[in-house]
Image (tube, rainbow, N blue to C red; front, side, top):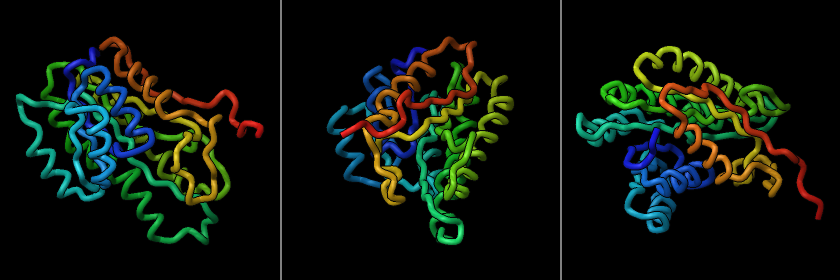
Length: 238
C-alpha cells in the first residue's frame, strides 16, 4: 500500500506506541484520526505533527459514542484504509489482589474496544475498492505468560485468536489483518505495576517504523502475525 493520502484510525493515540505510529504515518502524508480520552495530549500531538492528525476525544469502550462518531465521519467518498487497534490497559498482580474494576478495564479496552472499532469500521472498508489493513497490537504475553499476568495474558491471547480468525474472514474483501506482538516497550505502560521502563526495551518509534513497513507491503502479500523482541532485554548497566 502506498500510504500517501490514505486514511487511518489509531486507538490509544495520545501517548506511547499509538502516538509514535501516528507520527510515522503522518510523516508519510497519511491522514490520521487519533482516538484517545486525553484531550490535552491529543492536541499537543496535533500541534507537533500538523493538520493531518485529527484528534478524536473518545472512549472506545463506549460503543454508542464510537458508533455515532464513525457514522458521522465516514461515507462513500471518505472511507478508512487503515485501522490500528492499539489502545490497551494492563495491570500485573496476584490474581486474588487484582480488583474487579481493573479486570473490567482490561476487558473493556483490550477486547471490547478492539471489537467495537473493528466491527463498526469493517463495513466501510468493504466498500473501499483499494486494499485495506487492520493491525491489532497484541503482546508477547499473548504467546507466552508470566506470573501475576493471568488477566492481561487472557486479553492478549484473545487478540491473537481474534486476529487469526479475522484475517481468514476478511482476506477475500482485500482487507489484510496483522497481529503485532511486541515485547516490553519503553513507555509508562507498566509503571503502576512496579515495572520500570529502560532503554533496552523496544522503542516506540522503532516499532512504528516496522508497522509502517507492514502497511507498505505489496497488496497481495500478507504478514498475518509478527513478534518483536529486544535483542538485549535486561536493563543497561549503570
